[in-house]
Length: 294
Image (cartoon, rainbow, N blue to C red; front, top):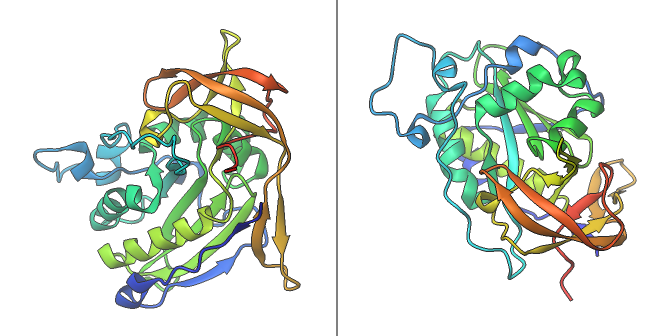
């Protein structure tokens, strides 16, 4: 079955001003250093902070904490789990509280789950492939396995000093997109989230397995994403993108189903243990997806 791109109207973009989007032809992220990528943020509202500490930059206040997560309803009816996104905010953005608060508060409605900034920052710092280029294919593959990032979103000041720009890196499709300019406001954040959701919807929800030191197989998703203990998931070969003559990606064809795994245990809010129940035991190249609807 082909996954078609939804045609969503970016109403919030009209409020925020022009939101111009382009496709990146290269994998390298320009203007962002490894130090920049560690300045990740989470919303103050989600952290339930009583009083802001105005003496400390907001990205440092939130770097090692994460938003409180509410469990998504069960997905036994086939509803897609929340897709994890990793937000990276440049430390040169001194006022981003409205932006981040809106991104977190609107995410679940868009089918997205922003990961805690400290978790993504620690991974970017410790994963070897990410230390030189966080947008490289090897780094994106590492992020897809843990902490399960589907879309890495890097936000920087826009050229010319007005508004913000963003680069989106899809770990599933190894695709890269640039949003050249959007407003640093709640409306701009809503437009950004709508664009992230549109790009994420180009392929079905999926996860990757990795083997723990105990020999068990893990995926970076949990009850918070909407998964359930005992739920079975398909093991699929990598799929293929469908491109228009212009080269634009317009649809996605999932790979062949080669096995099935079952969720046997959750480990905190970020991991689930799976076991093979039929077919091939998955490895890092396989996609773990919801079973196709009959």
